Image (cartoon, rainbow, N blue to C red; front, top):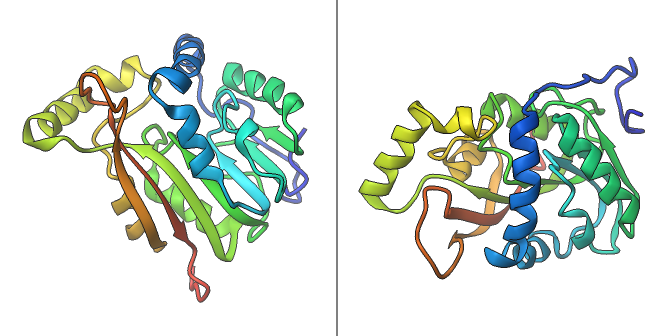
Length: 230
């Protein structure tokens, strides 16, 4: 079923991406990372204080749903991968607030313009095919002044690590990890897309343990400008 805010045609894409093996691996590893890497606590910080109607891009297996505050009236969660989408729907049933899980790609969101008070990006910009187009879509569906909460991984760790991240991106990593890229810069991408950056914090996950190419994260807030010519 398409979300209630879907466009008038009622058409939504079936499976914009298809990574069945990776999706199953990700579902298992992400649950373990909630405690081992501290992601569960970060999800609470990511979503604290949100209110109104929220769109979540790339909802994965729905691990954010349990952390939304009661001030959120509805979540429309877009997930392009079939297996993860089914897991997200199961998580939505257990959520304490209405969550509508729908297929769709970040570059062509199946929802009306200016339909949401806030948006959530959670470990998704690394894997979208066209980051500028996806963020342009995010601006379209947010009302002017709408808030973006983001928790993303990307470039970091000094010259040796950034060299490693870029080398992996050019070779095996995207093929092994469902299109994920290690060396993207989410803060710069949001700024280039015309969002106003609020406070953000650089993190390394896990806090204790080896530093891996996926360890370098950023948690923060941005806004669609109130006066927006897009």
